Image (cartoon, rainbow, N blue to C red):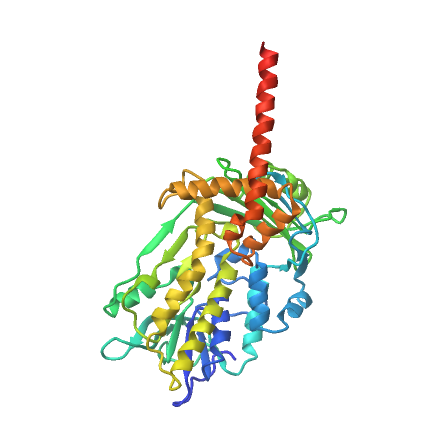
Length: 477
């Protein structure tokens, strides 16, 4: 439902700030517990999968990890069928993607890691379309939340203040108050929740920022009819101290999206010649060779806001009831690692679990204590992708926001050995993909079977290097 009426007096009402993927998934969860769920979105929402001003990163390559796809199917049964019917490209992550990683080309083989390659716009549109069929969901478009409403002693958020953008088609006041039993902030990196809480007399959360100064440039292509390949996606990763990487994936509409990235402000150019030169400079020329004779069908678009940012709501001693923060509004990752959408899906599941526990203890619908318990639980979910993203970003000396300690450096060295081994072992590569897709924790790399293979590889390479050194010494003599 779009721009419908607000709830009746005795109905329980939840409100979501932001209609991006984190907000949409949270809204689906909320329909289990509330009579009406209102989504306040600052953009006009198109009836087609089109670019929105509020999601500038949608121009670039996006990855929905296997864990995220599984959660999406759990929340919206049958949605994978809709993805396929809408043109999303079915891919096997271990067979259909070629990956030039730390140790060169990784093995390719069939596995159960079946996902879809598609644009961010199409994915968001399909989720929104499913939600719009639910008569509990109301979308309020072209509207900006300007503040929180609260009870007199500021212990509970009771709704939001909304300013609608001017639209002569709407016969509604430009300033409106929306009351709600629960407000969920899913407004992304630009969340104003810290300021709103401070205005209510609460301490705003501290923020941790780790920035590798990575920048993107992306473009859509139509490949030549004679282009022959046995892959549907190609990745060329950077190898520190090198800074350049790139990805190229088939998406809906017989199109290919190419995103080039550079760390430490080594940003890809947005002119034709510069973009091609940057592609040619990657550690492997596979992307450059694929697009050299391809037809560009979109402008070159840059994006530089890629810092890791974590607002530590979980550490606050006080929070008002009736208010939670989710998605990028809590923690935004360097998007080059492809964790954002799946972490948002995990956050929606966490909200589901928290509400289920809360309401099982309080049949009257009392939400006191939910805010803090949810934010603490969400922080545990965030911790793993945060360590994965920041641990990688710390490989570059230009990264700001802290320096890797000896433990991080040791784990980086060990992970390098795992990645080098993955280039030789399909089993290790599959394990790495399962960790990358958030199906298994990184601790699996420390299992005895993996540790043994890593040590054997290190010893083997040391012996080879020693033998080569001995041969060179004999030649010198």
